[in-house]
Image 1 (cartoon, rainbow, N blue to C red):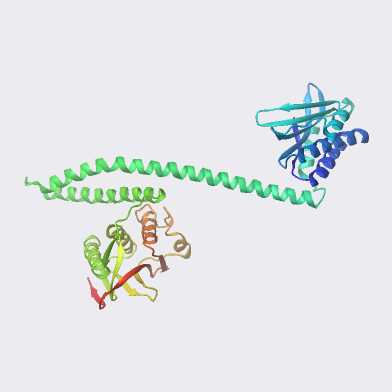
Image 2 (image 1 turned 45 degrees about the vertical axis):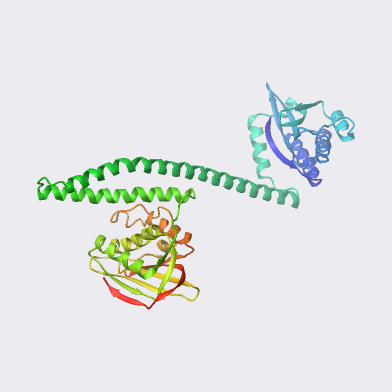
Length: 407
C-alpha cells in the first residue's frame, strides 16, 4: 500500500479523524459522494470496534496499485489477541459496505484490510499519488484535537530520536572505553621493558660518553611522559566504568602538601613555589590519587606560565568543616568558555593545542578524584593574568598552628 494518511486509534475522538480524513482522501481522488461516505463509514466502524478493545490500534489509508489499476485502501492494525467477529454490529456492517474486505492474521498483530476500486476515468497515476501525499502532509488540522495530536506525535518522535541518539552514544562510549582499556594494558608491557633497559644502562659501570648519557636521559624523560599518558588513559577507562579504586587513610594535610611540593620542585625547577598553610588538619584521602591532583594542578601551572614566575599554594580552613586548597599561577589565563569546559573529558583550547602538549585528561581525572573525596573543584581565571584552581576537602580535626614557607 502507498500510505497517505496514518492515525493512531486511541479514543473516541480518533473516530472523527478516521471518518473525516477517509472522506477527504476519497474526495481528493474525485470519487462520488456516495462512495466517499461508504468508504469512510466502513473505516470508522472498524476503527470503533478496535477502539473498544484497545488504545493501540493504527489506521493507515492510502492507495494500492495492481497493474494499471488503483484501489482506495484502508488498513487497520490491532493486537493479535483481539478477535473481531460478526457478533460486533459495526464489524458485520462494514463488510457489507466495501467490495473487498479481508482479515490478515500475523505473528505480532492482526489487520483488517478494506479496498474500493478507483475508476480508470479518474486517471490516477504516480504523479497524482505523490501530489496527494504532499497535500495531506501539509494539510491543516481538521480540529484542535488533531492539532494537539500532531504536536504530541512530533514531540514523541523527537524524544524517540533523542533516546536512540543517547543509546548510540552510550554504545560508542562503551566501545571506546573498552578500546582504551585494552590498548593501555597492551602498551604498559613494552613501556616497562624499555624502562627496565634504560635503568640498566644508567646503572652500568661501563664507560659511556656524555653524548650517549644525554640520549639516555632524553629517552627516559619521554618514557616517563608516555607512562603518565597511559596511566591517564587507564584512569579514564576506570572512571567511565565505575572501577576507580581508592585506598583511604587519615593524613595530616600540611605535611602531605609540603611533601608534594618538595617532589614537584624537582619536576618544575624553573618556577618558585610558595606555600601558605593553615592550621594543620587531618583529611581522609587516598594519598596516591591526591598526588595525581597536585601533580596535575602544579604541572599545568608551570606549563601555562612563563619560566621563573611564581606559583602559590594557599590553604585555609572554611566554616563548614572543610579546607580549601588553591593553586595560583601567573600564566596565560583562560576565557569564560574555557573555564566552563576545562574539566570536561578530552577538552583542550584550540589555541594551545599547537603550543602545549596534552590530551585533556588530567583535569577531568582530578575533578573525579576530588568529587569522590566529597569535595568540589573549580577555576577562577583572567586572560593574560593567570589562573587559580581551587578545591575543597572535608577534614577530620585540627592538629597544629598555621605555617608559611617558600620552596
